[in-house]
Image (cartoon, rainbow, N blue to C red; front, side, top):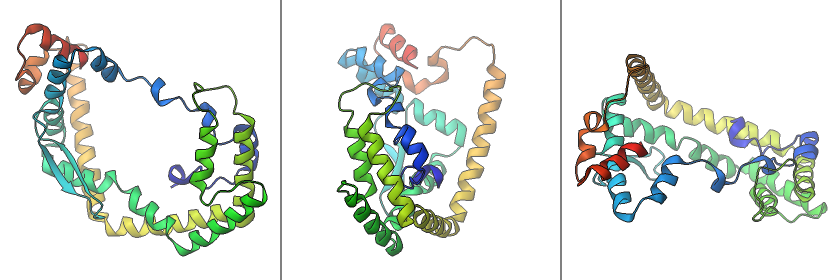
Length: 257
């Protein structure tokens, strides 16, 4: 709950004066390392297609509906990713069912909290408070977005925030403390979270057990192969070689992984 609402329940005035929202310290998405992504960009279109087919198979998926009714979660039914998950979790249908319940767990809690009458009321009070300080924001997300946009194309992380971010964050913290916005959000989020935890207790327990079994398998595999020379990928993932027409193409896929 604290991770979900840490910025939105921004009532720490002293920290806001020093760090703003902490946006200056967040690395740019473009700057984040992505070895597979960088490798794929360097491949020709044909070899990139082979790599993706080896990784995700034919494109067919196994899916399960999200309990909240807000869509579904799926995983490839073939390819290296499917084979790895099959080896760890034993059954892809059970895997996607458990993942569907947990991957979107925060979404219904957040939605219920944002539409909660007590939260809506205190958000309006917070908005009026911000307006008195010169900031026209109806919702907290607008304040954070405005602070983020101050950086434009500036590369981050930076040693310190820009002054305007601090001004917005401090006003936000002061208004959150003055109106009690943070306390209301935390209380109502905890209420809706506890309600969903009770409703999805069976799915949560199934997910926990599945993860525990997968972790034990992963530790066992890593323990057995520690210090050993890796086997060629063609031995580990037979389906990954389907469609590979040359040794050089397969070598690209193998190295990427």
